[in-house]
Length: 454
Image 1 (cartoon, one colour):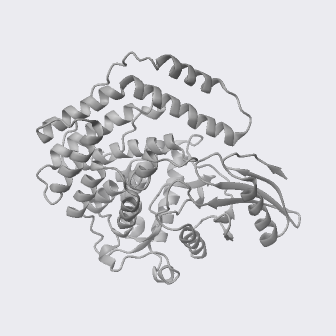
Image 2 (cartoon, rainbow, N blue to C red):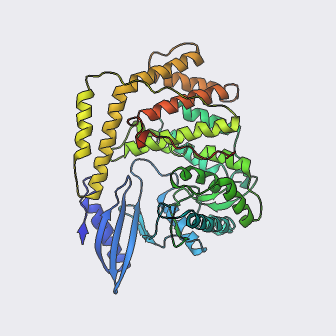
Image 3 (tube, helix red, strand yellow):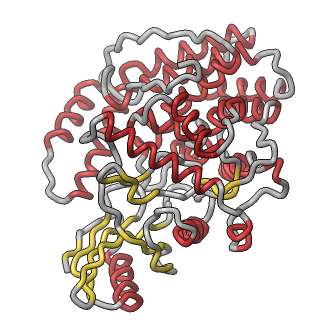
C-alpha cells in the first residue's frame, strides 16, 4: 500500500479509512491518496477476491459547515441510485473521519476532447436524466429524511433559507452586498407554484463516456425543491464547461418533461444561486481556517458576486457600468513580494497534494502583491462611490462597509434604491476581482454567463 504524505491531513485519519474499507468491504487496500483539493477526499484501490474496487471516500468540509449534512448527501445519492438515476454506488458511512464511501467513476467531467455533436449527445442524455429525476415520487425521499419545505408553495425557498441560516450563524463583519441581495429576494421571491421534485441543485456535474452520462456527481445540496432550480443553477457552470444554448436546452427539457419551463422562476432562481458561494464562504474568506483554500474561495465568491449583479441588472433592465483599472503604485514591498512570487513559481514538488498546497501559496503571494499595487486605489474608488450615495465620505473602507450595510438594511423594504445599489455593487465587485491577481491572469478574469436574451 502506498500512502501519500499530507502535512494537513494526519496519517491517522488515512489509516482509519483504510481500516474501515478492509473491515467493511473485505479485501486489501493496495493504494490510497488524498485528492489535491480543499476538502478531505481519498481515492483508494481495494483488491477483493481477484477484483479491484476503485473507490472514492468523500469527507466533510473543514472550512465551512455544509448547507445540508454529509449524511444527507449520502442518503440522497443512495436513493437516487435505487430509483434508476445513474450515480456512484454508495457502500457505507465512516464515523471517524466523517465520510462516506462510493465508487470512483471513470470518464470525463468536461468536453475538451469532445466534438460539438458529442457534447450535444451527452447534454441531451443529461436532460433525459433530469426529466426522469424530476418526475420521481418525492414521498419515499421525504420519508427517508431528505429535506423538504413545510408547504409545496415554499419548495423554491428551502435551499435559500438554509444558506441564509448558515450565513447568519457565522457572520462577524458587515456584508452589505449580501444584505442587499437577500433583501431583494425577500421582496421578489422565486415562486415555485407548488412544484416539488427531487433536485440536485448544483447542476452540470457528471462524468461521461461514449456520448452517455456515466454518473451524476456531487449531490451535496440536493433536496426536494423546485425543479426549475436545477435548470437555473446549471447556467453558472456553463461558463467553464459550455453546455450549449440554454434557450434550446430549456425547450428540449420542456419536450421531455411534457410542459414548458417557467422562465420567470428560472431567472429568479438563477439570481438566487449566484449567492451560493458568498453566503457560506464569506466568513471563511475573512477568517480562513489553517487548511482553507483561501484563493479558491475568494475567486469563487468574487466571480459569482459579479454573476449576481449581472443577473439582477438583467431582471431590472439596468445598464451596468465599467470601472478603470488603477495604475500600480510604487511600494517598498514591491521587491520582496515580486521575489516571493518568482520563488514560489519555480519550486518543484513531486507529491500532487503538496503541489496543490504550493499553488495556493503562490496565488496568495500574487494576491498580496496586487493588493500592494492597487489596493489603496480600489478602496479610494469605493469610498468615492459611497460619498455619492450617502452624501458623505466614510473615514475608512471598513467603516464604509458598515455604513453601507446600515443604508441597505434601512431601505430593505423598498425598491427605491435598487438601480443605484446594483450599479454601485457591480463596480465594487469588479474592483474586488482586480485584486485577485495580475491583470489578464486566470484568477482575475471574469467569464460572462449566458443572458436570458441570448
